[in-house]
Length: 98
Image (cartoon, rainbow, N blue to C red; front, side, top):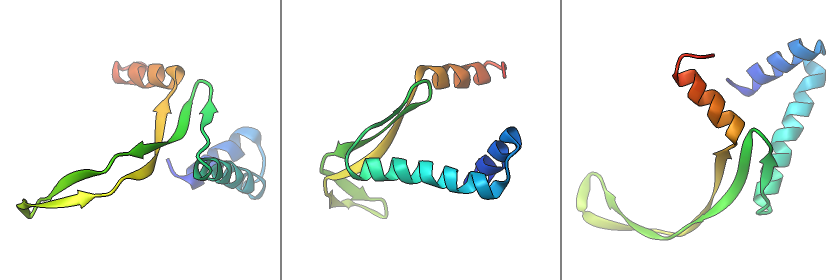
């Protein structure tokens, strides 16, 4: 699903024009991005949690020349942890229940 697909689905479900729904969807994504940029956690009960985690510095190897060691610096990365409801729906999908 793309952002445009999301706008289409919401627009149809609410019976509102896409011109009205698009800025709302954009604002939700901007809010999440802004919160993560500030190091805040975004929790959506039943859906999941978006947060920023620290990734430690480590050594990597060049796949073209495995004898060469490359230093990979520490960094912050956005992560998503699915909520209980989301996990259950995905597990049910795997079992053939939709």
